[in-house]
Length: 187
Image 1 (cartoon, helix red, strand yellow):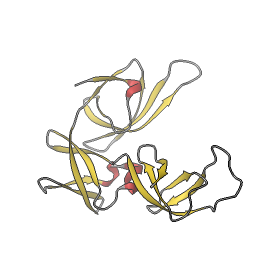
Image 2 (tube, one colour; image 1 turned 120 degrees about the horizontal axis):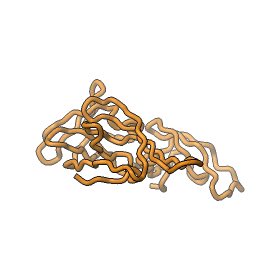
Image 3 (cartoon, rainbow, N blue to C red; image 1 turned 120 degrees about the vertical axis):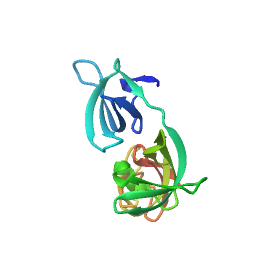
C-alpha cells in the first residue's frame, strides 16, 4: 500500500491509522505563525463510525488504502440507511446515511455514485464531483453591483445554503462542486 505525506491527505481518502481503516471527512491545512504547517484531519472509522481528530505534519507518512471502486445507483433511504444497487449484477447494498456527512443533501434519486469496497465489504461512498441543483430563493440582482468578488446567499432545492454570484437568479439551475460545496457554474 502506498504511503503519502500528511499534507497530501484529501477529504474522502481512506487511511490505515492505529490499526483501523479511517476516511478523511474534513481536512484543514493550518499554517501557524510559529512552527511548521500541518493538516488537521477529521477522520471517521469506516467500520464502527467513531470519529477522530488527528494532526499530520507534512513529514508524517500515512498508509493510504486503495479500495475497489464500483458504480452503484442510489435507490432510496430507509431508516437512516442508504440503499444502492450494483448496475451490473443488480445486487443491493446498504450504507449508513451519515457516511456522506454534510454532502448527504446532494444525493439525488437514481444518481450513480462510486462505492468503495475493501475485500467485498462496502465501506465508503463518493458523490460525483459536480451536481446540478436549482436555486429556491436568493436576493434579487442589484443593478450596479459589479464588485469582482461579491457573492450573495442562496438556498438550493435540497435545503443547502451556498454563496452564488450576483447574476444568478431564483429558479436557475446551477452546478455545485460537492467537494468544496461551492458554486461552480450555471447549468
